[in-house]
Length: 168
Image (tube, rainbow, N blue to C red; front, side, top):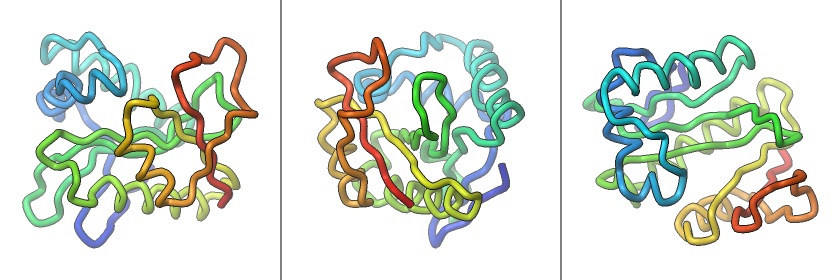
C-alpha cells in the first residue's frame, strides 16, 4: 500500500524496524483493553507480528495497518488502515494510538485519509469493529459518518462487539 500523506501525518507500511514501537503500542493498557492482547512481550514477538500480520496483509490483500507518523517529527504515533477480515464482508477500518497522542485528532485525520484511499480504489463500503466500552472510538466513527450495522453481524460474532458501516 502506498504512503498516504495528510496535513499532519504520513501513513506508511510497517517494517520490522518499527518493532520497538509496535511492542510499546500493543502493550498500552487502553490498546489491550479495546483491541485485545496480542501477547507481544519482546522485540522478537513484535517483529514476528509485523511479518505475520501487517506485512502479510500488504502482500495477500493489498491493504493493511499503516504506521502513523507525525510529519514534523517523524515520530510514530499509532496505526491506521484497512484490513481484510475473513469474517467480514467488507474491509475493516482499524486504528490504534499511544495514549499520549489520543484526543488530538490524529485518529480522525488518519481514518479520513484511509476512507479516501478506499474510495480511490473502488471500495464502496468500509466496516469497523469496536467494543461498546470504547466510547471515544464510537464517537469517532459516528463523526466520520459510520452507522451501527447490527443486521450484518457474521456468525459466531462476539455479542459485545459493535459493527459499524460506512457507505462511500
